[in-house]
Length: 410
Image (cartoon, rainbow, N blue to C red):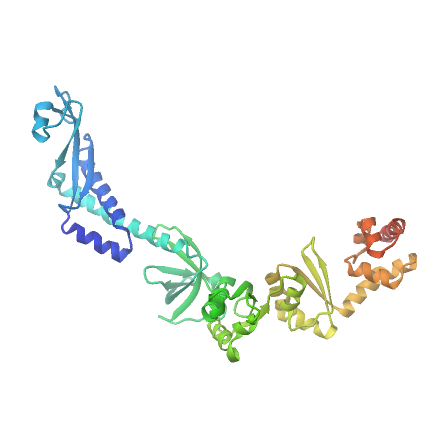
């Protein structure tokens, strides 16, 4: 039915990266389906014979003394002519001539084979890429469809949706494109590979590509955050005290980081030294802004950062980029205030308390720096905590809390 079957299987297996056994299984199923359409009342089985290089179809019929159903049974006297060792009650497999299937059935089998091969090819591509999510791939610009970029990846195509494109991206026909795989979806037309040039992982993979110390795991990337096309931050840490992680990423005269900046079409990149101490990490992430004081709230996973007045704009950054990226990178909610703003808040809450209670400036400052920034926070405070913070009697702590409550009612 199919000539040079072994050669066809080998060629398709190599070209489409489909296991030969999967192709053989598909062929057996296709031929069996065609045979069942021709002989729906019979018990059939299809097998690939490597020696004869063909798919053989066998009809299995029961060996009986007296035939009651000619489609499913055969007399013993006739059966022994095919197999001398056959016994009554056994099933005899008789090979059906493929030509008996008829031209229409053969064509149906071929169509099923083609579809099976296509399905197997889709499955092969899906299996190849499903474990590559997060990895960098290189392809070529093929076309644009409704704002999405279609990338030729060789065996298949990938799509960079509009939302995964940097505002700075511009590509020409056939131009090489680097991107990172973020998802793979099954589709009737085949696996849909979703690519991104905006994901933080894309920045990380570019650094792995450009910095040998990262590839060799001597320098570890702890995280990244981006405002695609504008600014990004990446946190790095060295396992070797003799290796400066920031210097390794920058390269001689900026050679390494500049290559990444060019790939990102001018996106500014801040390389941040990671630190296990969260406050030091945040200080590094907000660099080059100088920081006067940090107030950490572990329960709320937040930090209040006090900076010199002249450093406020630098710490916040253009359109708030610096603080937003630092917050994403460190995982802390960051609230930045100037020294003068902090003082105004301090005076607003503690001047009224000073008049009502005998609180000295240092005690008020300690409470303020410990995070008690509003009357509500003081009212909700635990007296034992206030007592411990200020080193005062619990009764005195209750007086402070009650006074805050009275002022809150005013």
